[in-house]
Length: 443
Ligand code: ADP
Image (cartoon, rainbow, N blue to C red; front, side, top):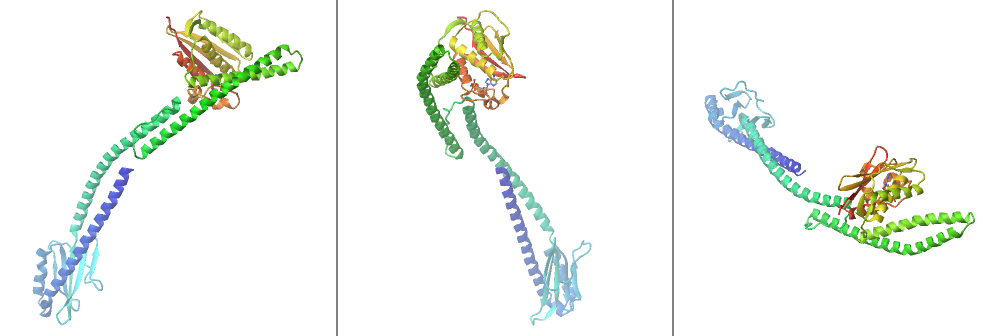
């Protein structure tokens, strides 16, 4: 834009300059030719009075050296009859408009034609003088000016381009830096990012705006985290006591439909309890208080147990194990790894309505143990594969029909990271495969 504007402005400037220069040149030439015609007229008075056309020719002939651009000069008497004329040697055919009537100057293209009256001291009209002048110089002047303008334009264009590149690089670098920080914040969810040394220009204002926004996001997140922490703590105690009483009622109540009502209430309370548990975990993760209780245990045994208990509560699906490689000891928090497994398995069941198959498999490459849970359900769009591990994130295709809070995978990811492990998901032709990796520490 900068280069384009400079070129446009300079072109307009040069064009205006050249046009006005050419106009000045023509004006100057017209004036000088008018003066010349007048002087020749004055000198020709006596030749006309004495009808000495030889002397008149001599006067005109002198023009050959004085003004070589004159192609043709002619003196006519008062009746308009030719008296004396001069044609520049070598001029093929003279095409003059003759003696002008009315106007005494005519400018057409490269030809200037001037006519003047020859008047004696008694104010009597003796005749007319006309000069035909060739403005051949004009073309040369035009060419030189246009060439000069083109060279200056090119030099200006070069300068403008270099300046534009330098300025652009400076602007782009800072804008890209800002964009990268924005992307980083949105990708990682780390809103503690701040840009130092923002500067005082418009981009600096933008950067300060970004810092302010990040500050507000951090503060509102802190308030939200505090609220989640307090609310889940406050909910936990009454919920435990409700569940206790309902358990008791379930035991003692025999009559229907009362027993059925109690059992329905228990199911709902269990859902609430699991939500409160998740919220408490999130709050612990946020405050860095999620502790691991590391012990050595056989993970294959844990996988089998978890599959068995999940199978009990999910009769609609068949959860199977593809391979059984025997005992595999790992050093990890058994309860937390079980929590990860339960979350992935229950998602596999929950997000495959109408399907009935979930397959678990494990592999071991000597340093890491990989657990894979494959389902044949609704699947996850490519662009949301990493987002689902964010807090409260639910995919667009699932959130409408299937209930959930978008907390489980966020907790799973944190648990795996604390174990120096990994968790991710891959798209399958139908459904998806969740993987988690635990390092096998032989010591
Ligand atoms: P919740 O299931 O309670 O919403 P999660 O954190 O466990 O929370 O899962 C986050 C989101 O990831 C889910 O809302 C769902 O959109 C998507 N998701 C998780 N597992 C699967 C799966 N096996 N198939 C399809 N979508 C899944």
